[in-house]
Amino acid sequence: MARPVVGIIGNSYLLNDQYPTHAGGTMNSDAVANVSGCLPLLIPADPRYVSVAELLEVCDGFLLTGGRPNVHPEEYGECETAAHGDFDRARDAITLPLVRACVERGQPFLGICRGFQEVNVAMGGTLYPEIRDLPGRMNHRMPPDGTLEEKFALRHIVSVTEGGVFHRVFGAREVMTNTLHGQGIKTAGARIEIDGLAPDGTPEAIYVRDAPGFTLSVQWHPEWDAASDPVSRPLFAAFGDAVRDWAARGTGPVLQKTG
Image (cartoon, rainbow, N blue to C red; front, side, top):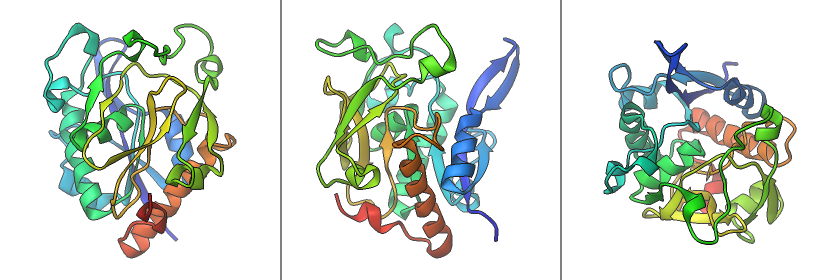
C-alpha cells in the first residue's frame, strides 16, 4: 500500500556560493519517513515552478520547515530593517497562501521554526525581528559553535496548556526542547491559539483554533533525533496519523477539533 505523501517545503541556497539549489535537511525526510510513516517529497518553494493548487492535489500533508531566511515584514504590514535578516520572497509566495488553503480545506500541516512563524503570519499575525533584544527574554538563537549535537541540544522547558492539544500529544505539561531561532511571535494571528510558552514567555507551540484539520506548529526543531526524542516522536506520529486520515477520507483528525 502506497504511503501518503508529505510535501516538505524546501529552501533556496547557493551551493559553493554560486550554484543555486533547492534543499531540505535530511533530518526532515527522516522524521517524515520513519516516524510519521509517510513518503517525503521535497518541494521547490517558488511560484515559478509550482502552484498552491498543484501542491494541494499532489500532497496529502505538508511539513513547513525551518530555514535561515525570515518571512518578509511586508507580509505583516511592517517595514524591512537590518534586524529582520535575510528573506525568501518566493517561499513566502507559496507557503502563506498554502497555509490558508490547508486551514480552509482541513489538509494537515506541521510547522517548524520558520514554518511556525509562517502559520502565524498567514493568519494575520506579526513577528518580532529579534527575540533576544526584548527585555526579559533569553537568547533563543542556535549556539554559534560546536557540533550538531551541541547546537540541537535540549535547552529549555516549554509549558503547554493543561488538557490542551499539545498536552494530549506529549502526555506531559512540561517538555524539554532545543531552541534555534531569532524571531518570534509579536501578535498572534486570527484564530492562532498559543498553547505552549518558554520560561521567558516566548510562544513555542500554536495551532489554528476551530480548524478542521491538523495545524500544530512549534518554534523549536523536533525533526532532530525525532525517532528517539520523547517529545518529537509523538508529535511526528500524530502528524502522520493526520496525513493518513486525510489520504483515506479527506478530513482532518479528531485530535484538532478541541482546544
